[in-house]
Length: 291
Image 1 (cartoon, helix red, strand yellow):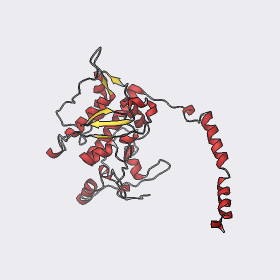
Image 2 (cartoon, helix red, strand yellow):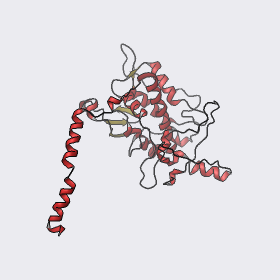
Image 3 (tube, rainbow, N blue to C red):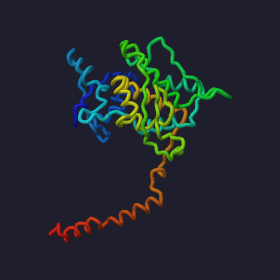
Image 4 (cartoon, rainbow, N blue to C red):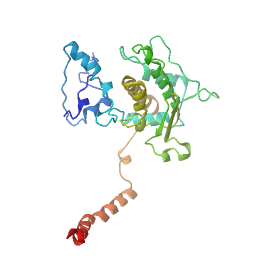
C-alpha cells in the first residue's frame, strides 16, 4: 500500500537486452521508500505520456527527490546488509591497497552510464598521495572514500557552474559499530570527516543507511538531492566490488545462534518476569488506588 507521498516515485528506465534478464529490477535504496519487503508485494507501473507528466516525474516524483520523508524529515533511502559489511571492512584502520587495487575500486565506483555521469568527461580520476611510501606505496580504505568525496563535489557535465567545485564537507558523528570492535583507544567508532577527507572512523549504517545526520544526509543538505543519490550509487558499487573481489564475507548458522551464557540469561529473565504482570495488577488492586 502507498502509505505516504514518496510511495509514488519516478524512475529512469534502462533496458536490459539480455533475454535471460526479463525481470523489472531496481536499486535497493528505493525499497524502504516503497515499504517493499519482498513477501509477495505487487507494484503498479505507469509510463508518462505527455510533456506535463514527464515534467512532474522529473521535478516532483524523481527518486532522488524522495530522500527524506515529509512528515518529520528523516531519511528514507540507504544501504544495508552486504554494503554495511563492505563499508566497515573497507574503512577499518588496517585495510591497505596497492595502486592498481585503488584504481580498480575507484573505477567500479565512478564509472557510469550515459546520462548518469559522476565525473566530467575528459577528466582523470585524481588520487591522493599514498599513506605509506616505503617499502611500497600503499593507500588506505579511508583514502578511497576521500577520493570519492573529492570527485563528488567537483561536479559532472550535467551540473551548472554553481554546482561545480563545491566546498569540502566536514562532519563528525558516532558510528553504530561499538568501540570494543577495534579497541576504544583507536576511536574507530568516532567518524571524523574534515574538508572532504575521512580522517577517522569506520563507515557503517550510521554513515550511509537510512539514518538521521548520516554522511549521505549531510551531502543531501549541503550538495543537494542528486549528489546524495549519486553517493549512494557510488557506495553501493564500491562496497559490492570490494566484497566480491578483495575481502569476501561468510556467515553461518552458528553465528546466528545464541551462546549458552546468553540463553541462560534469557531463560532467567523470562522466568523472573513470567508472573510479574499478574503480581503487579494484584498489588494495584489491593492498594488504595484500586479500591
